[in-house]
Length: 299
Image 1 (cartoon, helix red, strand yellow):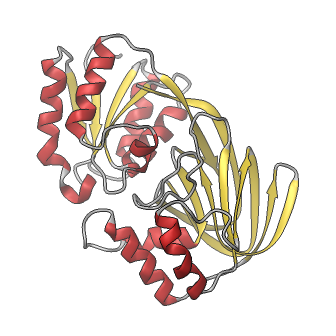
Image 2: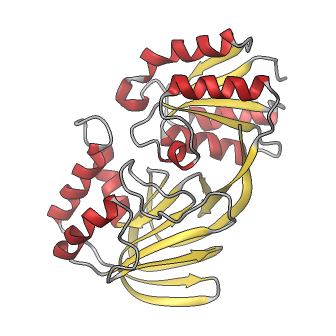
Image 3: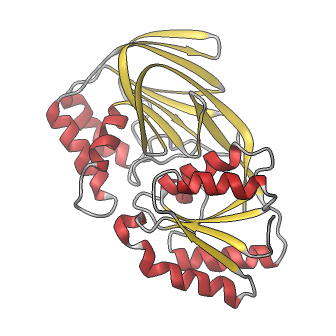
């Protein structure tokens, strides 16, 4: 049964291990506002998803998560698998914090805790934001297939450096190894697009990898995904795109396409890597993607 205490799930490994040094101050902010907090640390992948589902199924109305985009990804999958999803409060403790930036959540976790405590104490209603779904798994911010998924895999394997620059270095490593340009067909809201691609990114929010506004036009409450896909690009053309990508000025450049979509099916001639909110998924040849308008309640 739910209690009056606010469940606060957190990932001790978030922010490359910085989370335990900050969680005490976060708890103190809620308690100073008269809000009792029940702190639960994850010990393995999947813990936050399991706990979020259990708490939501038991009738918990509000759930706090402190961690990075991976922790938020788990929480969203737990909540949206429940018939009675709790509203989510986010405290950014990660490396990229793409979801927090998309939702104008303060990136300083103590500031986010102060704001959340004020909103909860004042009885402010949660706001609805969209979520996406790929092959039955939910994503809160973005899904990538192809090149950006290779970057995500490479970044996850790198121990250093800490911070967002890891994604930039991972991108350069993937460029140095060589670029796959598989042949695919994209069925987009009734239309079929066929050819070789470098990547296909389905975006609820604008950011990926903490540094890259890959879909600068994306809004997470408009009931659509912003699909950004690139034709077969060689190393030279991708490097030429990088300065524009860092500033969100790549859309419309030769070989880079954007379109809003509600649902899409991608079929490839070979198994491709993918990620959901930066969490790497098993390679697959078919991907079914759609938007869930207003599925997530955000405190």
